[in-house]
Image (cartoon, rainbow, N blue to C red):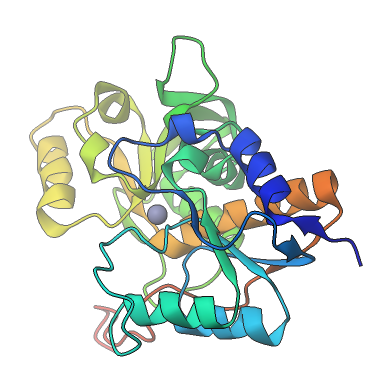
Length: 278
Ligand SMILES: [Zn+2]
């Protein structure tokens, strides 16, 4: 079994998803662990939860690599009877290291946004907001469907590419609307709804859209203004696509075994009432 020091994996991760690309408010990187600890198996997940931690323990992983940082919210305390401090103290007891690549992995080439763009079948992709002009890194992505398709088909195709969740995929727009230009932002992308590139695209794909944010777009369209169709996917499902690519990159470079978490960390368990009267 191949093993490497944690420091080697951190160096590789920092090359793949440079910390300099992270947003100012973000807190990615190594949250727990020692750089000289030997790592022979890595569990990859979107989030660290107690069930993900238990999965890592049961499958004898010494490192959990996630998209979302485990110290994103201020822990304040490591008391076992607190959240999220209790999770961190349990990981420390199990000697399982925690590392995350968050907005740096969103912005990086072949990162989280590119994985979603790939699932949508986009070509000629480039960042919505490149770090530098012509740069391949930056937040969000824009691209085109090589063959325009009706909105309903784009939504169905994307649903097939994503893991299932209780809420499924929400779509705003006429099902027959032809879609060619697409903008997207993995995770919570409501901030870009007023972005001219988003407004001018046929479709915007993101997660976590609230009532007023989504209704404003529809109302603008009803008023005759330029407005994209919307697809709102599960935050977890949309970002989980990146894990396969991240695992492949780490295995290829280090030979270390990488396991994709079987845990669905979308927070919803079931749905009732589909609005169709059944
Ligand atoms: Zn996210």
